[in-house]
Image 1: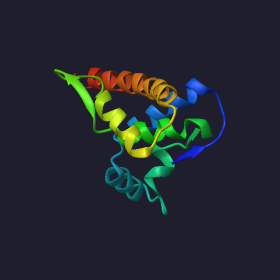
Image 2: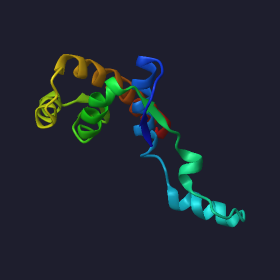
Image 3: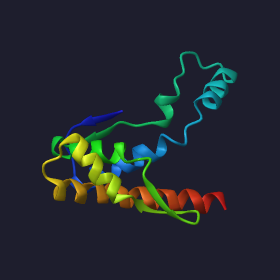
Image 4: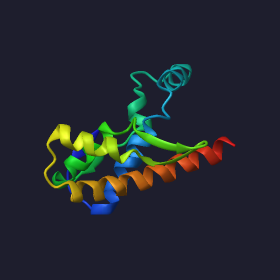
Length: 126
């Protein structure tokens, strides 16, 4: 769950990428089955695998644009190289984002961390 709150600006934006990336790695059925085998009653995978991500109110637009752009990645071979900024700006248009420079800079902070996480996942898979 992503919530609006307080904290360090860049750290909160990179936490968005970490939260977003981690949500792809969860095999809820497998975790639930393992919990049942261990006799754990009332287990929910979210309790173990996800953590809350707090975002400052002034970063809500960046979060909105990043998550709406999350299917618009550019790749070179197997490596993710960045978001398609044409799509990012179209999403900003759709949502009526006023301060595009600020939001783009914040999206780029999230994007940079997401690319690092993609690269780590690819290295582990090789």
